[in-house]
Length: 141
Length: 286
View (cartoon, rainbow over the protein chains, first blue to last red):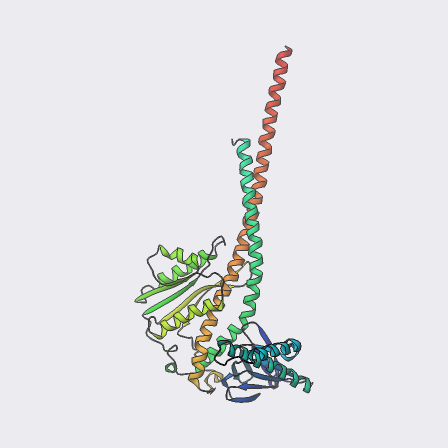
C-alpha cells in the first residue's frame, strides 16, 4: 500500500516519547471539543484538555490517556505535545484504582478552600480517566 | 641524580593521584549514565515543541505577541552555559573560547552586549573581563525550575525591551567522547523563509491564535533552556570521564617509568656497596 494513506503520529511528553508510528486516523480531545483527524486534514493547532486519544491503524486501535497539552496537524503529520500520556496497555489498573480511592478518601470532608483540594481533585480525575480509557480499550479489543 | 628516598616519595604521590583520578572517573561515569538517560528522555519533547513553535511562528504575524516582535538589534544578551566544577578537560575552555570569539566579533554591531553566565566556572572566567554581566547562575542540579527561572527573567527582559536579540552557547551531548558546541539564536524566534506550499498554507487555530501563542511561546523557551542545561550537564560528565580516564592512564605510565628508575637506582646502589665490600676484603687479604 502506498505511504500516502498513513499519517505519522508522534505523542511526546517531557519524560519520554510515548508513541511514534504510522496511523490512519486520530481522535483527540481538543479544548474546544473532541476532533478527529484523517489524512489531508486542514493544518491546525489546538490546545488539548485531558482525555482520551485514539489512534487507529490498519489492524488495531491504540488508546491513550492524555493529560492536556497541544496538538498540531500538518498534512500527513500529527504531533501531540502532552503534559502526560500513557498507553492503555501500560495503565496499571490496580494502581489507578488505589489512587482513585485514596484521592476520593482525601477529598471527602475536605474544604474546597484547602490548597490541597485541587491537587487531589486532579489526581482523582487522572485516575478516573485512566480507568475509563482502560475500560474503553478492553471493550473494543 | 634523585635519591632513592625522593623517587619513592614521587611514586607514592603519583599513586595517590591515580587513585583520585580513577575514583573521579568512576563517579563521572555513574553521573553520566543518569544525565544521559535524562537528556535522551527530554529530547523528543523539546525537539517536537520547537518544531510546533517554528511552524506556528512562521504562520503568524510578528505583531501578535511581544515575544515575536523583531526590533532593530541594538542590545544583545548572550547566555553562556558552562559547568560548576572544573577538572573536565577542555569542556569549559571550549565554551569560553567560543563566547570570547562571539563577543569580539559582535562588539561593534551592538550598542550593548551583556552576558547571562550559567555555571560557577563561567562566572569566574568572566569576572576578570571587561563585560557586562546581566545575571550569573549556579547550576547545582539541572532542573526544570532552574530553566524556568532563567526563562522567566529573559522573557520579561525581552518583552520590556531590555534587549533585542538573545543568543546561547552550550554543549550538545553526542557521546562521552564528543560534544558539539552550539551557538544558537533564541530570540527573536527564527522564521522559515520558504516558498514551500506547506508553509504558506493557512493554519486553523483553536481556541485562538493569541491564546496559543501565550501558552506555547514561554513554555517552549523554558523547555529549550531546560534541554540546554541537560545537554550541557551530560556533556560535562562525559568530558570529565574522558579527562580523568586519560589522567589515570598518564599516572599509570608515570608510575611505570618511575618504578624502573627506582629499581635501576637501587640496583646501582647495591652494586656499589658490593664493590666496596669486595675491594675491602681484597685489601685485607693483601
